[in-house]
Image (tube, rainbow, N blue to C red; front, side, top):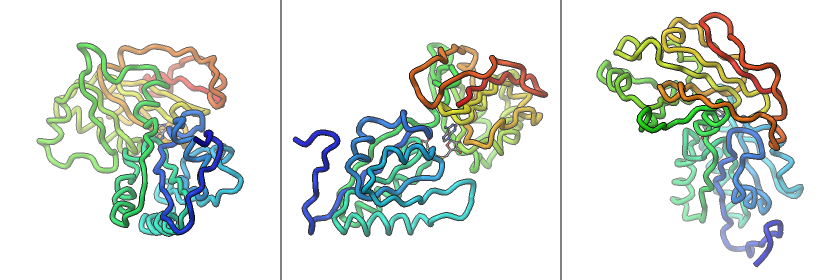
Length: 284
Ligand SMILES: C[S@@+](CC[C@H](N)C(=O)[O-])C[C@H]1O[C@@H](n2cnc3c(N)ncnc32)[C@H](O)[C@@H]1O
């Protein structure tokens, strides 16, 4: 059995192997051991723009590295081109890692890539990653589920909010914890709609940015304040919105840590601007 750092060569003439690897929330120490091992063996790496540049320290010097990520709608490689690259290199017998932020199967188009590989008859695996949902709750310090408080997690995409009143009523009444990916720009509209359809104005809301990465911020407020536009992003990094009673059960992880990228705390929790949000920031 080769060790983790030894390359197990795929005999030429055979198809290669593609690993769709979840990189975690953006900093290298939250990738899984399995993902790291796939990277160490990779001959070709296709990686996303949201990942910290320090990920590149994990790439083998011999690997062909291709940046294919998209960020905030900026021009980038088309999804169909990513599929073509995956197929091309796998058919050429190479070990390919498609490194994606968070988990490949959560708003990551990993499903489309897996289906394209399957349709082409190429061998592949999906290595799960720490999704922003999990990183955000752990980083900001609240449970996603909590006995007798939250028994359900509802995950939404902020770019595509419900369209009917019935759907909004269901959402407002769903209880549990709502987590909204890509929702910082639509937070005010989302909060307004939830209020309009019966959610409590004092329901806690948190906006967690750069979760578990250098410069993480978490801002706590209420649905009413968010609906008034008082809860705004504090950084230019990715942010996740959380809404629900479980946010009342906050804990405060010890910030002195062995995690390299989240090295220090600058200031303690403080009132954040208008609207009474409480913001806590970690500096990298
Ligand atoms: C295209 S989705 C990718 C989600 C990813 N596949 C995952 O499982 O986390 C990008 C969105 O994830 C969220 N996100 C990703 N990384 C984050 C982080 N470190 N902190 C907060 N939110 C993050 C943001 O809502 C961002 O707009």
